[in-house]
Amino acid sequence: MTLLIALFVIAWVAASVIGTQAYFRGEQSKPIHERNWNSESFEQLAASITATEVDYSTRVPGYLGIRG
Image 1: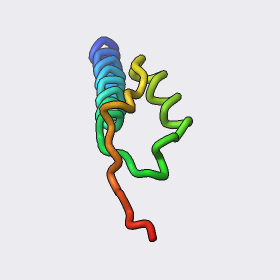
Image 2: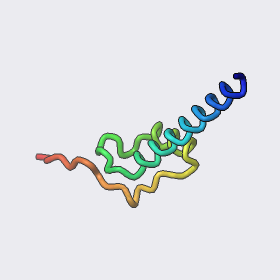
Image 3: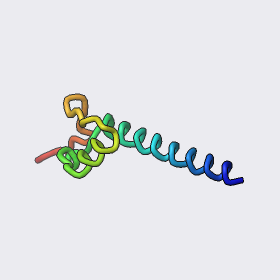
Image 4: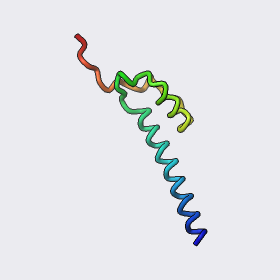
């Protein structure tokens, strides 16, 4: 029974780590709102979780509001 519980906990931790990396890698590639373009906190968190830097040359603004 202990072995089964340990296996369940290990599988849950592995799934949460993989899911977290998938989320942040997805967020790094999505269009980004102008107000979040230079979000230092997201950039630091994403870099620490995924071990990759945010490539701003591939990101596009998600909202180009009319300025008048």
